[in-house]
Image (spheres, rainbow, N blue to C red):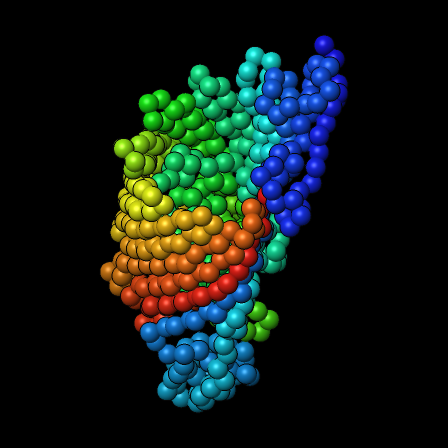
Length: 494
């Protein structure tokens, strides 16, 4: 039977113009593939529905950066930046204070702007079809635009990877699926694994998402308290095969297989970076940051050996009711092998061996809960990174609460994570474990459907004794960095 476009319906819903209950339907393009009816109806057999969802979030906030050690100064002659006091030789090379013939560097303090913007954009193109026998199928993409600002930079907004620009679109997800009510859903492509899809108790649904939201993208990389849990680009941007079971008696399950940890993001989020860190003549370090998942470094380097492969992720989830109380919970396990490269640096890495779980309860608008994860993993130099052999495993937990009434949602959460961080087997005796912690609080007000206002507060701290967290090398300064943020913003979704 010939396939003909017999009817289409298409409307573009401008967020400020058509914020009505029916606006979501107005964004769909439904194509009738078979049959003489005058109008195509989404979800009926032999139709394809095209949707273009998305969101934009923009905030202005005040950011305070702190360190338990000395402040930063720049030598205007050489442009070299470091913690004061420091000295330079007659030729302008940085040397230890007290070196014969050295002069003191000029005490010219450089500071980052306090009030800065943070914005993200997401586009979610979806194509969903229904076959004549009821089989559902389709494909989905996620295109992200982040104002990375100083998040990829050092003290002076120095980019860590060459060629990176702010607000550059990146393809984060791309997958196809087939589904049936009787046997479940099969996804193929770059998409979330079960540990991310089933995550419960993460409390990211007020403001822009707290420490996994829009604002941390605008922070300088050194002060950015890395979100330790599974719903991060390094997990959901990698191609994999995912099976999701149907829900039976309030329980569903999922399992996935990921051949390689190299994803769609390339240098953007995969552990690749340049050395030294500099913007023009301003150098803030000389340590290569090529790490786990960097997909264009030599196979004999440490970074190549830190990549994961053959990853299996499985999860079980419960969503039900106990009287008037809604309950949800999940447990998950992720295991992988590590990439092995001949002629490497000698540092070996363990494959992922990670357990995770979370619970939350809901009653009369109030939600409380939390998460716990731990095992052989190291979410520091690269999210979902591997733990170096001979170093400490990772443990992280989160507690949170939120309250929703009519158009207002308020909430707060706190997480803490202990892991190897920048330890290696050779430095574990002198470099301590890495501790990251972060608090998020604030509220969201739905001005009208699809348009929200945000009040956001973040506090974060990272600490690792024996390691300079600013220039990424062993040292006794800048072992603890703090950041606070408070901002106002708006979001538009469709």
